[in-house]
Length: 368
Image (cartoon, rainbow, N blue to C red):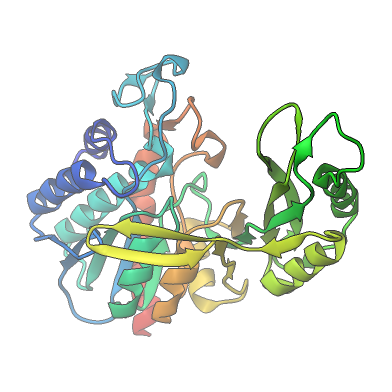
């Protein structure tokens, strides 16, 4: 029998920033061996294990990496202590999303103890916080019947989320001494574009609601108080549903941007022995509200409707397996990435039961 709280505390103490998930991976590997499974690591640093069985396979998955803790003195408790206070287990990753990983291991142990006949695959991925290298790689070789993704949801079933694209707007001018007249100052063009962007019509999606675009950062070059900059770059955070889509949002941004050059930069991310280059564009994922697996899962959990996450996840990459992705995880998403990150021990135990119920229900549905 696995103690989910004890495993979570150990995971929190195993610091695992993106690309350096080794300590958490070692903790999870020991826990999987303790319940009788033999885990293996792939070239991206993902950890995987399978409970054997007959029939359709159900995949339980989540990420091992966490965002930085920041200033440790700003936390009520040390961020990597795994301390328990007043029924909550504190620390970076408690909510996002090591609590779900601990609950998945414990749920699999419970299913094995009661003789559940079907195969269950556990996939704990690397580098989700920096674009999902682990899931992008693993999806090419997986063929589950259904996928349960453990991102935090307050134990409510989730069926997807909006996408996110990060357009950059570049304005050019004439660099020179700020005391001189007649220079083309790109900050004025930036101001006009911001006015246009504030009122831009981005549309809405019937599932995910309004598309949004917020300016988040301005860079000037050179960055000096007595120089008219030669260039100014504005970063936007745009969230979009599948209805309007990435291109619809970018087209609206271009119309509002005036003379700016609009582009979406790329990033190169390494995980394990794998390196991938992809744009700052993370697609939406929405499972239809009437999907039979979704109805089955809602019934198993005693819930009426499924929600939508406010953030992006690995769901669109995992969906390339052809399997529906259902979200369910312990913890309040509002506490993720904060200095108040903590998980209720009661919710952690409820998640163990919830994952076991979801696996059993989805297995029956896939077998029918």
